[in-house]
Length: 170
Image 1 (cartoon, rainbow, N blue to C red):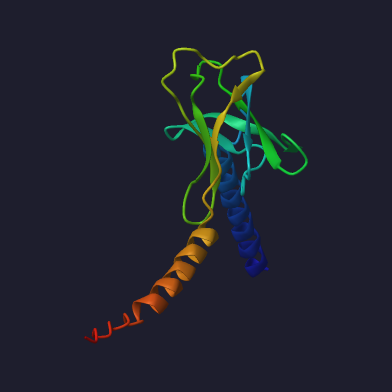
Image 2 (image 1 turned 180 degrees about the vertical axis):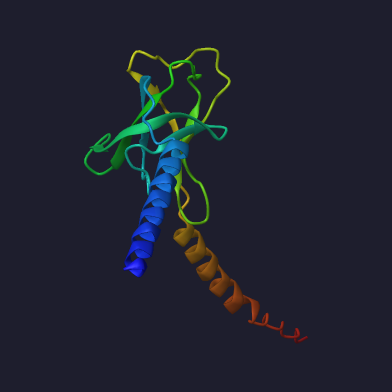
């Protein structure tokens, strides 16, 4: 009988610690969507980006991604991804700001990074604001593939000996 009581108490302690851990993780994760004005930006690809992803300036969260939509622009031969973001209303961005999809770590977490420009005019905060300068994310698998294939081409030409010039006959 005493053994069952001990297991019950131990199970309750484990459940209480798990609940405490979940509460702490939720409080420190800062997963809320930022309320503010809407911005849009068009990208050729947005690997790893999804609704609710952070929008950061210099590593500080200033917004969140509100939605992704596939569009054809300017014609059916080119597909782009329209990313809509919500940015804190206290942040005013110059019209020459650049948006890019950045990687948090080698494990592949993504976020939207905005690099403010230097222009005197600011992007409209009435919901029709648009970031026109964008940069697609760099894909690690593509970079590794380029490194491997460029290394193979370089090795095959490195082992070849230059043709010896034939002596001139008088």
